[in-house]
Image 1 (cartoon, helix red, strand yellow):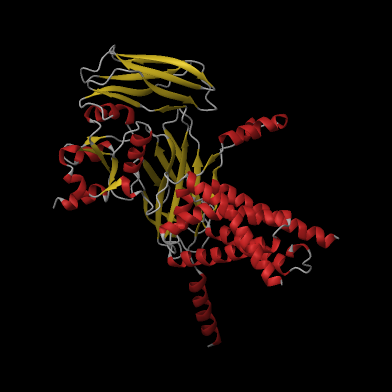
Image 2 (cartoon, rainbow over the protein chains, first blue to last red):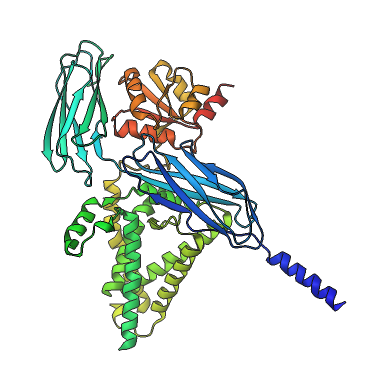
Amino acid sequence: MKTHIFAFTLSIMICVTARAELKWDQTSIELHPTAADKQAIGHFKYQNSGSKPVRFKSVRTSCGCTAAQSQKEEVPPGEKGEITATFNIGERTGTQVKTVTVETDDPEHATTVLTLKAVIPQQLEITPTFVFWGQGEAPKPKTIVVRAAKDFPVKHLRVTSSSPDFQAKVEETGSGQFKIDVQPQDTKRPIASTLTIQPEDSPKIFYATARITNAPAIQ
Amino acid sequence: MAKSFVWRTVDLIVGAVFILAAFTKLFDIPHLDLHQFRPGDLVAFLLGFLQQLRFADPMAFAGDIDNYKILPWTISIALAFYLPWLEIFCGLALILRRLYLGGLSILTALISVFLVATIAAKIRGLDITCGCFGHVSQHWNFSVHLALDLLLLAALILLLLRPGRDFRLA
Amino acid sequence: MVKSSLVRQVLVVAALALVPGLGQAIYFRDKVSWQSPVPASEMVAVAQARAWGGNAIWVDARPDDEFARDHVPGALSLNEDRWNELLPQFLAAWSQEKKVVVYCSSQSCNASREVARRLRNEAQLKNVFVLEGGWEEWLRSNR
């Protein structure tokens, strides 16, 4: 009788104390991809520190630009693994924050949100990237300011216009800053030009647009 | 003498922690490439760091306060502007031992309210970034946050209850 | 005496902190939204956007495959995967009196806000709005 009671009590204790628990090394990763990288990949490592297996029910990302994969569908007790989040940089700029929501059958931590922060280096800051004149507006030059990032020194800038109807003149104003004066020949017709901006000794190309818009400019 | 030194050290550490916390809420901390650091270039390194320092977007910290879903948005954004400076002045009060009791009381009240709000948010299942160290701390898990905040509260209470009140009423 | 000294000290510290806090609030007064987490002036409801008629340019910030599957009739695709390639065609359709309505797959997705931000900050366009409720809201309003 005593043995039965003991075994029963022990089994209750085991059921009560047996639990799944997925412990994450980090739930937030900050990445610093280089200008040449097309993707930023974060590895979210975990370990099942409980005594029951953990099953992944779903792994969802916050946007289509990020894919997330789990190595395993079920994690036995004591086992380690990782969820790999791949963020496609595309032509994004600045700091991008993407999340991966992981759902498991662990009732204590059913949902975990993993955060991937990618700081995309901006070699050149171009302001504005679009200059325009209304039809009939005086064809005065408009200025685009280009600032090079501190860790991306630029000595010279090459600017070409895709259309001969627009002229672009570059002037260095010091401290890694340049100004591009863009001027149309006239503003009679709605025409456009893509300005290609290329730092010397860099294969990377940046763009700005110049355009004569259909309607007269609002003064 | 030794006791006085210990209390002084606690004052300095706690004061510095709150000033640092405020700093991370006020500014976007530039990414430091420590591989490029050379001891002889300390001044240049620091100048470079300061040049890259920018005000953080107050909407970010206001969003962290708003995530607790306790206060209306307008109060959240007002607090986002006010709280970091309050932390700095209270931290300085501890370090410089001027307006000491006032600074200490405010910090104790702040961290107590914050602890209650954090635990309540956790119980409600809200998705919160702590916000206590700005977005720098957003990768810390709940247990780490709780442990650090309880430690700070304990230190503040000890400072409040310590014997000797000579400078503290100045 | 201790109590009054404590109150005095608390008030002094609180008042001191108010000065730079107010200064920072004044500095950022135009850059923050005081009424709601997203500036109301940057959002537009479906009904309002549709009422703009031909004065609105609809911009789809979703990935190419989602745009290809379905989109607001007449909308232009402009996403961050192919920003440099798609921007010129958008700018060709844009003019100053037009209102730009950017949408993506749901309110929680950030793509429309990012595209709107870049149009405002980089191209320095005015009258750029994010559609409240996104693509799903537009579909719901069309039923």
